[in-house]
Each structure stands twice: as structure tokens, then as C-alpha cells.
Image 1 (cartoon, rainbow, N blue to C red):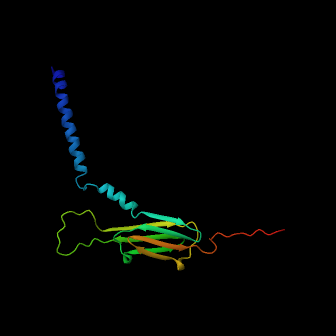
Image 2 (cartoon, one colour):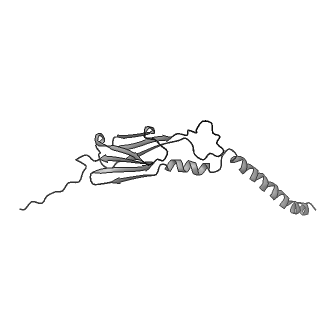
Image 3 (cartoon, rainbow, N blue to C red):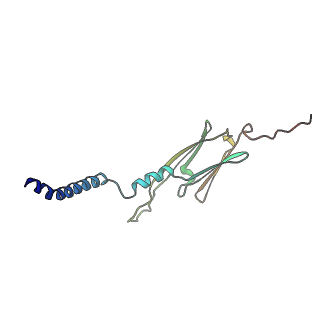
Length: 151
């Protein structure tokens, strides 16, 4: 008789444990807001950057919408280019925000350059949310044409 009771009660027990497991999983994610994981991943990859080599220089272009030039720091040290910045979250006074998807954000990225650059001649400009940094190569790092002598 006890065996029949256990077999009949097994689905009820399984449902109980399934519900209990669901409650435990829900409690793990209680503190997270929707999309938090994807925003964290996006922050690691933001800002989108392109670093290309030209004949006499390296050019870095990066998208930094909403970031002012005062909030960006560019450094070259020991052949490493470092880009730091932040986008500030400044809501206008007197307005009530009823949905917020943007916020304060800071970033820092470093890139090892393949050849020496002349940091004293480097230039940077910010135009329509795109930062362009021009890093001229040192004369030693630039390609040289070797003439062939007639013997």
C-alpha cells in the first residue's frame, strides 16, 4: 500500500521541487535589472574603435557620441596609446524622467602600437561624435626605399 501511495504522490513532489527550484533561481536574479548583462558586455566593448596603419602614421578612429573633448584624455607612453573618457549624465533641472536607458559612463582602452610614434606631432580632433587621432611614425619607423646601384 505504501508503494502505491509513493507512486501516486511522486508527480506532486516533483511539481513541488520544480516550483521550489524556480523560486530559488528567481531570487538569484532579483537585484538585476533587465538587460544588465548586455549593458555590462557593451561597456567592455565601448567605444567602437578602429586603428589603422598608413605609410607615415597610425590613425585611431573611435565613436564617442555624447562625450565632449574636455572629458577625453589621450596619452602615448612607451609605445602604448591610452584613451580614457566619460559621458556624463546631466538631466535638465525641473524635468521628471520616467524612463532612463542612458547614464553616466566611463571608459579606458589601451593599444600597443607596432612601431614608434612621434607623440610631439600627434593630433586629435572630435567631429560629430567621432574622435580621430593621428600619430605620425618616427622617421626610423617609416618604410624606406632602397635604391639599387649599378655595378
